[in-house]
Length: 428
Image (cartoon, rainbow, N blue to C red; front, side):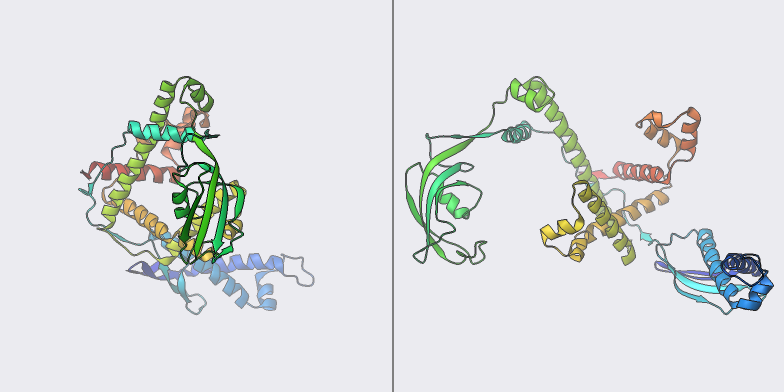
């Protein structure tokens, strides 16, 4: 194989390749040995005829076409390996010159390759690092939410209705002087804040006491979800017969033993604070690196091909579909519940797919420019975090360190590149 031309224009290479006479003849002979097993001739067992007999009965063109296809395929892959091209799609505009006996095979094609990254400024980027410390107020709010999960509603007669209360009411609703049956109820239950009759209705009942009838009118907007009252004034007469308020369980040792593995309130608060601070630290780190990459992206030029974005969207959809299956749902069922067409659903991933691809390409380009590499020590440090039982011996471990998986190498190189960017960022 000989590369006659390799010319890059943007994200595309134009290739002209020559395959040798020797390799072409080998490909044609290979085609003969493949096809002879599929034909029969009187007096010969299948697969036992000679090439001259095959060509005499079936013609040489069949072998030539099959051999050319194989030779072009082999030469193409050899060429992109020699040129170290990261091809992202099938070759286009393939042109094969007419076959000439005892002459090399010439062909040309165009291939799309991984886009070039024109790096701008990537050190000294100003980034704010958020404080990951968890305040006492945030801790109390989190614990209160846990308590709410174990809350009970109890009847009260000591105060008027307020937000979050569950009421037992008698409601009469008139529209244009006619009873609106859908909303006229005896002994109906509703929660203030749920908006069952609209936000204004809930506000009108806030502060109302038991057995204190109230009459009021509300005009609903034209786009209100209940068509019978949309754009109309509704006259209400409401009387509350019961108010039930939310009661949270006491935060004591008995409660924390019920909801956790801790024994005391103090131990429980300490455990929750540790969990929240760990999450807060991770969230702060994510925001830091997202902001850092956004700053770098402003300085970078990348022309992403549509095929790359579509492929990344496919990956995102596949991952989401897999998570749905674990919940017992199919993607069709999920989209049916949302009443969302598949193509519209795919579009929700487009911006994130482009951002992910750009980030990966930028990190790869920076690692290359800064000559960042994954060393054996990096792999050893990572393996210390693993379950060592996966390696049966020290020899197995040593072999893995010298020949790690591409996936692990990619992860560690990305980490090293992010660490480089962090150490060279301007923290404000």
